[in-house]
Length: 212
Image (cartoon, rainbow, N blue to C red; front, side, top):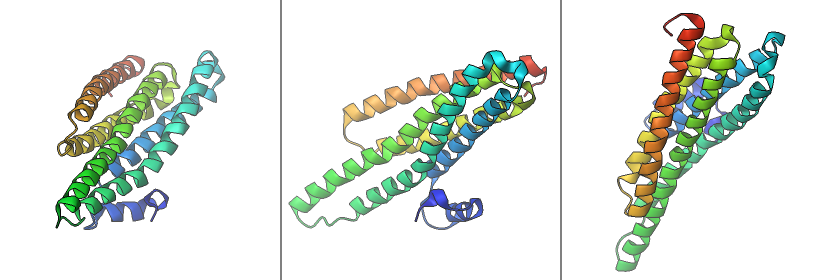
């Protein structure tokens, strides 16, 4: 089943049922795709206005990047589900002999790394979406600024959701070098995400006079 291709209602129903997939990683990817779509919309609404012509080149870049991000994140929904299923399959492997135990342990570790990488990539995409949200908040059509703010807030929430899914997998990974790298990257990403969100809120307030 491709969860990416389900209707909104069907996807929500699948999340709500007793199956562990799609879970937080898949949902964060979907929310991130929606955030990218909102940023893209604001950029398009800016491109449609001649009085914003000084910023059209920047908005065209934003449209191109956000299209790429939303499509990639939609694909990540199924990738996240597949990665989780592979972890569960590895844990179910036989462990009756020393050889079976060693093989099972190796495959579990490989599956956990893959399961960590998918939401890690989502975190990286959210960071880029927030940077573009900042661009459209600063230079985009002021009539759509609440959508830019909404995009930034959604991308931030999706970032923390994806981050939680990275961390839960790292907890069981034995490769200390892999864990150290991931944790360092996530710490850097978190600072950038939080900084971008603060800037979006401040710029939105400056441009509208409202506490958005």
